[in-house]
Image (cartoon, rainbow, N blue to C red; front, side, top):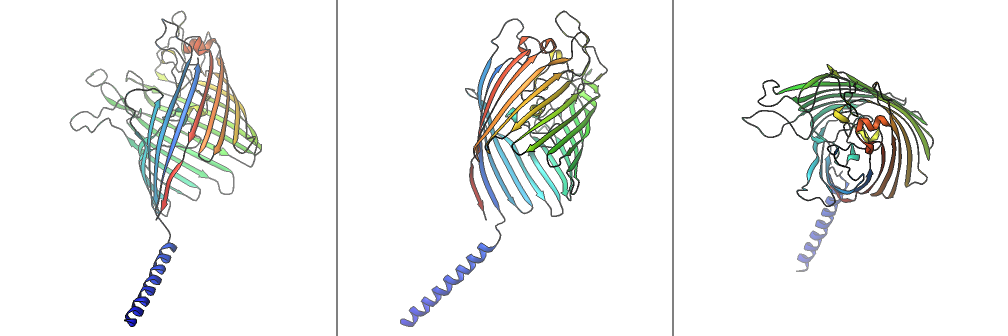
Length: 448
């Protein structure tokens, strides 16, 4: 009996020692799989007075104010291991008090495969962002933000980045019916984009080239005079960023050619361009200032009736369209010019000369003040080109790593030109305050 107990005891010791060695060996191995789950809560409020045209309200005088609160919720799920990444974001946005369906929608959902030689392939719904986001960006200040259903393939390594993006949109899984695409998530039927970026070794200079070919659905179903078809427009140009220690110089130039499609689904030749330059100086890490100028081409017009503006029929359009850019980032935080239309769909272009100062008095507080001189790019004949003057004041405070508060106030003084082009006194003077409270907790992270 004693021998049996001894043998059993020795066996238990050996088993425990062996198991501890196995577990120790397992712990020493790299945990290659990672899963993380997080949430993002955005509460946004605006107090608006003026700044936008009163479309459809010419016969009565509405209250010249609008206040609202909205909430945006995002659930983020990320998985990664060597060679593969997966990312999904469910999003819900609703104004406080909204009735009806407020179901979650997929904002992002993609999988990415990478190789050791720098090649990659990414497929799904992606929030694209390139260069300074002037042409392609998420436009997150609009709260719904932009994403694209695309295939993205490319190479990244040794200072080079080359991306090719392909998209094809459809309304439904049509089998026997047409491939006509309208009122979808994106304004294009298909899209092909090539982007190349190079960072010069040991020198603070980066440059990018961009080419886009965008197919828009034109025509109407069962209309012989304007049959269904796909018209293509092209966007091409480049971006340069020179950033020595205390100075950042940025410049960009883009052209638009091909065919544009209007609301009536008719197409017209487009020939437009834009250019921008900006200098940012940071004498210290606590403050800095910036100076910039943007020029976006526009169309001409002639007055046809008293108090109104009419358009001459042009064989081609000259008004530049920033397409999928983060517009609020460049033309004033409220962007009166590309987030809302002018009278009769007029596109006079824009000149934006801006100067600003920014700083962080403390590690958690950041502030900025920007002034914009705004003018149209085209000759208005009987009106001055000046649209007005806009002031943007913004501040953000980081309470913790996942709780922040941003707030801002815009004051704009418009001219008669602004009043005529945007219809009404509400476009001549604007006072616009806003805030955004963002809470982004990390819920769960594990490795195995």
